Image (tube, rainbow, N blue to C red):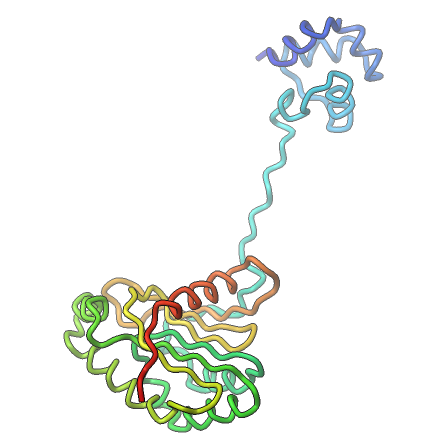
Length: 246
């Protein structure tokens, strides 16, 4: 197949095969094959010829365009778990205990944390006392989105009661300096457990209880990555959430 783009460029610029060959340092037959047979020159030769002609090299020879290598795994991915039930409570406890600047929790209820680790409130108080900013966003039990989640997961009113139970667990933290507690009425696509530059993300799958859905552990490696996507999502939800009154 001929290279009509190259042929048109040569014609418009008054170039002959021999003239381009001499300028590019190649045999005239090579240029003839580029045009009539659609052959692609070596990259360096193509770059030189394109510069001589004042054209984009990829416009003349699209096959030289190198596809960006796909990354099979994000560099921020620390671990991927098939389901939340696979994670021992110690994973959450160790993550939150290591926080020095910020702890963010975005859930509907996640009462499993207090059930598996009764000292959770003490841990959060200790972190706050050390200067760590703690933000907890729980699901509003009266929200239509929470009620719909219960229907989708065939959990009925159970999820609403668990939201209320979660609020009871966290209420003793109201008024503690450095700790904020709010309720949100958003559709929860992921539960987020952030500690500084690390986060555990529990995906939500339609019709599946959270404990049966995947969890990925991310560590921030630069701006604009997966970690930032989830922290920005948390911030957006936080802005819509209502402070819990004492």
